[in-house]
Length: 521
Image 1 (cartoon, rainbow, N blue to C red):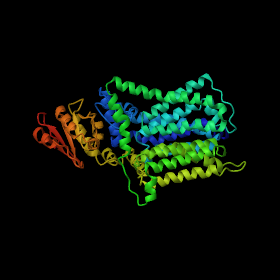
Image 2: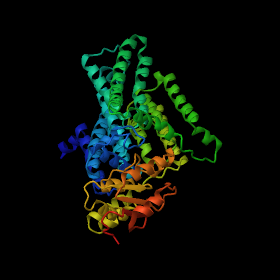
Image 3: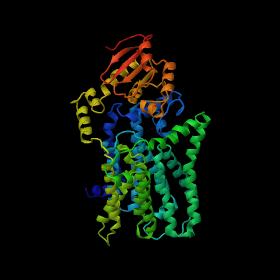
Image 4: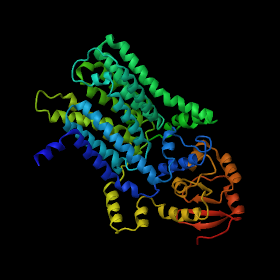
């Protein structure tokens, strides 16, 4: 028994416990219906890609491309399996990063535990295949590769920095790390601030070691930077060769700036409102970073790095000031590291405690919580999520009842999908409104470039949309009851060429008149 208990305190055993926890917490993920809007968009675009569609030209969303290619699988279940594998890798890499910072197992395990809990539970939508989680994996695997290099090993050593000597293998790891960080930016643009969080180490290292290591640090940074640029440049070449270069620039890259500026929250306090402007957020971020530079020799390397990464990640999270919980996942890794640093001080029985190691993590956590309250970020229910799943697996809740707990559209969507898919391997469907989950569930590719009406309204492309619908002659058209905008010409098209095939609670399903009727009701 004593040997068994001792074995549990080994790094590999603690990591195994964390991975087991990831698996247990994610078991309900594999039973979920097609209920989440963004995931529906990813799967719909992935389906279009699998059927030969050109991303950004034939079908459009506003994110960089990797997430859509990850979603080019046959089902949501397969996408969730991809996510599970991704989070196993992310958790393993985070554990190694934590161990490199803390040098002790207890704070490493605490940081890892917090990471697993907050990236797996529904609070911040960790149970859904959102881009932030895939970004996290690319960033953390890249971080693991950085930790294999001489420079980064030396940076996290708890002693004075001396001369840095690069080995041939270091260039391989630096390039590889850069590629993974580049892939993170190709998954979601805000990942550039995670890149900055690790890139800033080069400056910290220069301040600590002096100009004697400038050449080596510059070579290291240059190699890392080339690795980052490689996948980005290749993606530009790829889309240019496919004839989608301008569309990639417009929607995959530039549209993000438009998206970030379209949400303006209201605040009762003028001071708070000022702080949440771009200038206000930028000033706060720079003040923290400048402070970290000024007090470089008074702050431990792990604390300096984790604080810098956190404030950069928080700035990225707040680019659009939107209250969507999954945006805040980006801050979880550095925040978990900061909490681990504070814990390491509390359990330190030898020597004097470093108050900064407690004050900065507590201040960072307070800032994070304050932002959540200021923006009214509504966290998802967690207790009911697992309670409903247990009742479903025990037969106490029917599949239809279980599905309906996720989204009020589930009953309608699953019934409509049966009708839409009947007799057709490639369903032809257009939805006016916001219900991309139905596209994904029916495995249908929209006849227009857009999967949701709010993109059409935002870009004011009504004329092009109705022209595409008229030309495509979709077999089915769904009109959502809660869609506030009218699509000019759609009413006439429906009255002349379609008949109601299903009047559901939340939308009307229309079918072309020249198609066999097979009415649902």
